[in-house]
Structure formats: structure tokens, C-alpha cells
Length: 130
View 1 (cartoon, rainbow, N blue to C red):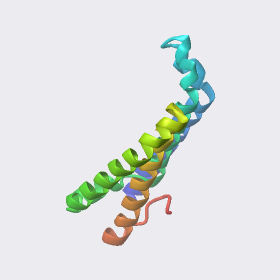
View 2: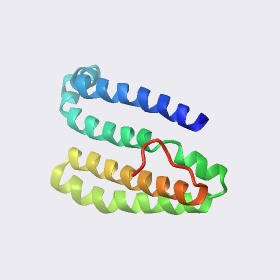
View 3: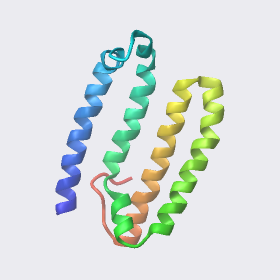
View 4: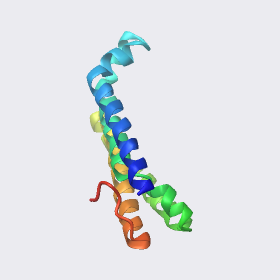
């Protein structure tokens, strides 16, 4: 119950931040200079990755507390490999939007695998189940 209420609060705050980023991406980035406004789409793509992490919940912490550090290390290693495998070609062909997309794809992979591992090893269903 405590995990569920904490996760709901986390998701609510993350959703509000996500909406603010989507609506005000250009004004936020313009505080760093006018030429940063062009990065609004990559910022929104990366915000999707953050929202995905919020939807999945505190899986990494739960796995660490449950003694699954080796599994977490392997998942993080595969996430890094996915980021490199997608990041290099996506950056070459799509520029910064491709880099942001590769980052979000690697976050999605890690989130799904960790969520399923929490369900399998701990028997916990997280708030948002894939």
C-alpha cells in the first residue's frame, strides 16, 4: 500500500512536469539562448523517457533491496549496449532527435525488464503494468 501511494504521487508529479515540458519546451530552452529552442523536440522525447520511468515505478530500488544487484547490473549493461547500438546510427541519420529517441528506447527497455523482474521475483504488481 505504501509503495502504491508513493508511486501514485511520483506519477502525478512526473505527469505535471511532463505536461509543463511539452507545453513550455521552447520558452524553457530559450532561457539558455535562442539557438537552444531547436532542441525542444529532443527535450520532449527525453521527457517521455522520464515519464515511462515514473509509470514503471521504483523497480530498481525494490530489486536492490531484494538482493538482485547482479541482475540489475546485467540489465544496465544491456541498456548501455542498446543505447550504443541505436544511438550511433540514429544520431548519424536523425541527429539530436535520433539520439534522444535512442535514449528513450533504452529507458523503455530497462523499465519493462525491471518491472517484469519485480513481478516475477517479488510478486509485486507495480501501478502501471506492461
